Length: 275
Length: 200
Image 1 (cartoon, rainbow over the protein chains, first blue to last red):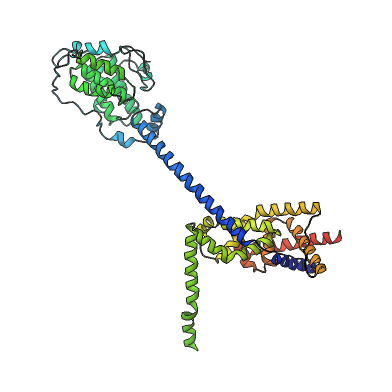
Image 2: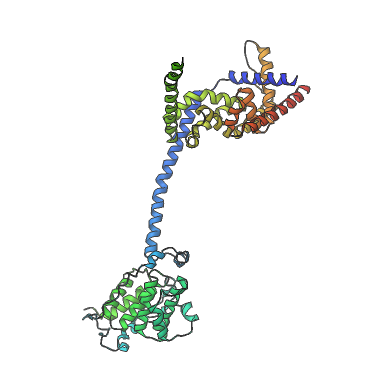
């Protein structure tokens, strides 16, 4: 009995459905309008999103190239191993100076190559070279005045006891041979150079140390600081032409605002008053 | 006779092969989202999809909405069309996938109309017969509203549309045995529900 009712109900449902009139044209127009609107929305999204994405990518690339991103970006990148390939390559940023560098005639503050190192240090100390160690985080450093940068001592340097300059030289000689991880090697090179520069105050050893660090980590966290300190070593050693080339980069803002004012002041002091 | 058997495929397979090629091209155009291809498929298959939608939902407005959704989603759905079934079957399977929301709204609308006592009566030359048919169809619609969607789809495909269990299974994307089980449970529940309604 139930089967009959179900069968009859099924037949009735089929007939009811067949009897109902569809709105074919109306629904067709609706379908095509919806598809058109969807396509328009998609096009609009592309037109807006692509330029936005391009601007974003360009900005980030520019900020990365000019070291304007927060330090945490570079630290994270370094820790994750991105950009290692670039670090593996030899440092092209600061080519090694030739053995005999002619001293520029207009340099008044700087001493020629045969002048003792103490004399050559004079403009640096007068203008920009602070007695305190340079900042460990270049972007954080703030400069109060030209001659007295308000910087904190680097954490690494403060934690390390003084070491003899031979150790610095050794570390500078064999940076890649160490089996320790890359980050540790870079830090060791940095510490050695720092030691030679600020503790033992040996400009030749410090220069070798900074060069070794920059070879190992040309885009490392302390690379801008290493370049700056390297320039100071060159001044102390009387290689003023090379020092000027590096300081020009800082003064022109290639490293952002880092040491810009000090580099300008140092260059002015080296060149003397303009006529 | 034997020669005729050998020659027959040459004569009879050509239209089938060309039709398959034409459908492939059409599907390719659908994948690219060409409006003309969608319009072409719509004109050809509207009646099938609409009939299934109407039988499934039991509601004209919900059926039109379901048809709309099927053809709007066709360009993206065509990306996964592998040609294992006909385009018509594929369209019905899209309708099955989009049916849940429309079934809910159709059931709500039916319930609301019944509460208000505004069920439209058909005006036809044989009113008595038509009224009893409409009442029977509505009783089945109400009973169908109480079934789970998969069982309802299985019942409409196999019993109302007279499709085979294999075809229904293909449309629902389930094994044939599952389709048969769903149909069995659907019929059992519907019988009970109709009996209950008849006794009231």
